Amino acid sequence: MRKHKGIRMARMAAIGVAAISLAGAVTMELWNALMPALFKLPVVGFWQALGLLLLSKLLFGSFGGRRGGHWGKARFAWDMTPEERERFREAMLRRHPGPAGCGPTTTA
Image 1 (cartoon, helix red, strand yellow):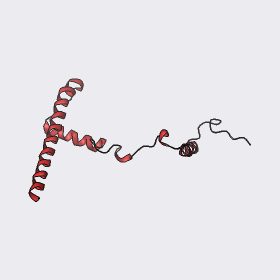
Image 2: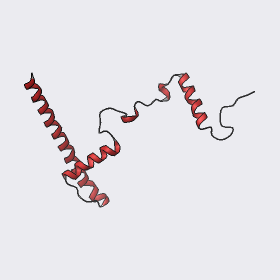
Image 3: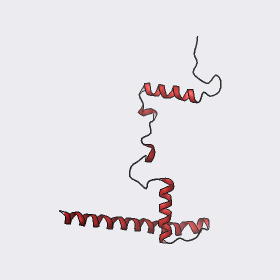
Image 4: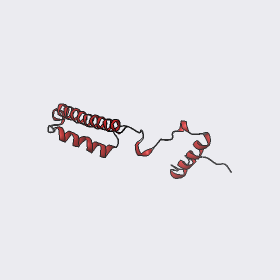
C-alpha cells in the first residue's frame, strides 16, 4: 500500500512541476509576443515570467479553485426573501439617506 502512495505522490509532484513550467512558458511567450511591441517593455525570461505569475497571485488572488475568494457568496436581491429585501432597503436608507424628499414618505 505504501509503495502505491509513494508512486502517486511522485506522479502528482511531477504533474505539478510540469503545470508550473507550462504556465511559466505560456506567460513568457505571451509577454514577449505582446508587451515589447505594444508598450515598449523589455523581453522577459522564464524565471521572470514565473515571478510575474507569483506577483499576480499575490496581488489578484487565486488562479482558480474556490469561486468568490475571500468574500464568499454574494447575496443578490433575487436570492433574498421579501423580508430580507425590505430589511436591506431600510438599512441602506439609514446609511445613505440621500437628498431631502427622496427617502420613504411617512404620513402622520
